[in-house]
Amino acid sequence: MTIDGILNSARDGRLLSKQEAVALLNIQNSSKDFYHLISLANELTRSEFNGKGFIFAQIGLNAEPCSVNCKFCSMGRDHYVMDSIWKKDINSILSEAKNLIHSGIHDLFLMTTADYPVSDFMNVAKRVKEILPDDIRLVANIGDFDYATALKLKEIGCTGAYHICRLREGIDTTAIPEKRIRTLDAITKAGLELYYCVEPIGPEHSYEEIADEMLRARDYHVGVMAVMRRVPVKGTPLYENGRISFVELSKIAAVARVVTRPHRAMNAHEPVQMSLICGVNQLYAEVGANPRDNISKTENNRGLAVEDIKQLLADAGYEVSF
Ligand code: SF4
Image (tube, rainbow, N blue to C red; front, side, top):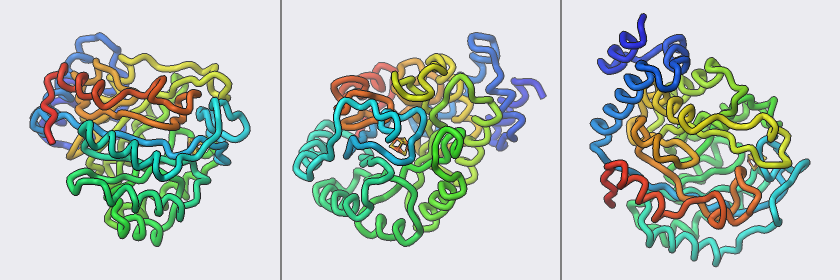
């Protein structure tokens, strides 16, 4: 089938195959097909999501050496390159959460390294939930966990969890892919909303690997889909591999939008204006630790503020309302 044939059948609502997803990923950037692809992704997002833009914010609760040792992460224990080591106390977490709420966000994510004790995380999440307006979702971004923990997360007020099987999981990380998948199953079985992402995309990843994760997300019926490029942090083992361009990231976002068919929002990370005409209508503000940064207060370096995100969405013609 031609690219236009694939795009037309996606427009008609047919779910695309892996082979078709790979064909779309193989489109040359700036070719005529490229514009047909981003036009469809843009059209689907603006019509199905009613022209609305969404602001999510994430607080990284700790900057500590992590035993999972992901080869792209500034906090991997064997190559720790973060500028300091710390764990936020509850008062600073609550104060940051209040600032973000006051600035205007739709969903709040709390992120930890994989070794952060789950019971400590629960205590923090409970306190944050107490100050969170009912219409802001609370999302856990933590290490692997079982069904009982998923139920507890739900009980204390988390509405969802960000969890993924990373690209080359078990090769570029020491996490076990099957365990990651068991956590995905626990999240959905417990009735938590699963937030998915194809990440961290680098130049060495094949389109087949990328397409596999898009289809995995579709199988879980995710509401919010994302794609993220790897940021080469100096001193991490994958630093020399470099990074993909923003136009490539935006094309992958457009393909993910068309293939995965999220029903609430589409994200690309880190935030970039051009993705917002490629089917992306949701961006993240970030505070605290971040695996893509060596400055542990990422709000002073790579992380954007809520106001920046609001402006990016408004400039792209999205309506941001609460
Ligand atoms: S990406 Fe997450 S799990 Fe991997 S080393 Fe960094 S903090 Fe640990």
